[in-house]
Amino acid sequence: METDNEACAMKESKKRDRPSGSGMYSCRDIEALESANSDIGLCGWMLVILSVMLMILTLPLSIWMCIKIVKEYERAIIFRLGRILRGGARGPGLFFILPCTDSFINVDMRTITFDIPPQEVLTKDSVTVSVDGVVYYRVQNATLAVANITNADAATRLLAQTTLRNVLGTKNLAEILSDREEIAHSMQSTLDDATDAWGIKVERVEIKDVKLPLQLQRAMAAEAEASREARAKVIAAEGEMNASRALKEASLVIAESPSALQLRYLQTLNTIAAEKNSTIIFPLPLEMMQGLLKR
Image 1: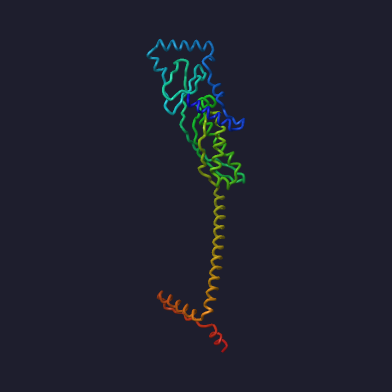
Image 2: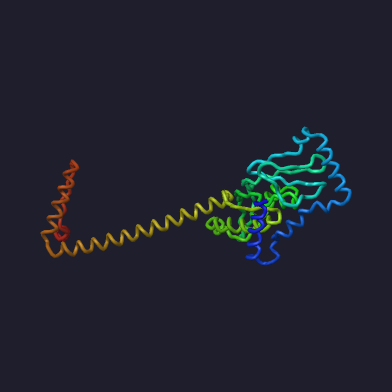
């Protein structure tokens, strides 16, 4: 009972924060589903009285049919002659039913997870991608989950698939690859609004994987490779430019002191000799070679 009241209070506060027409059920709607015992009519009351008399006559054997137990994570919705009893879901613990006129349904209140199967989606920029995800939800109001929907789990799964396709259809490929958190938050908000009437609370939605067509993967890889090659050429050109500037500065320094060129030559010979090479190159001045050519 406290769980349903808390859920009603949460839903009422959410309803005040949202615009009208959002599909939110109020506590009055929930109470309308929980009919009172007086609504069962005269024949219904007669059947209830007969059931009580039968239970008393068959004591203590009938006690085992009247007392039921629900676990901590479950709630029981009791139907008396087909009508939901006032007071909402029972549990956890012991509760009492009449053996002939009452029936009950157990509802699991734990968080349930399921995978969204891969969905083929056409993006806003006309690219076909395959996207899957995972949804976490729980039953927030057991009465609505039983009275308003045949199978809340199956309905939530189908709604998650259609919501994924609808949300991704408004995004282009770059947004799908980069804004997964925003897409997941949008899906969660949409699913939570749609499942309020079923007593379902969608806690979390995650996008697992985005699969691109093989041809598109090759095209993107070629584009990325071309971009890397272009950056490498630019970096190499910048290195050549910096090296040429350094050589120009070095030549200016050597031109100011002729002995510096001879020292550089000796240093080069020392480097070549350290590598145990048998060939040594002797540089000749260009002026000497021009004199020999003139002769």
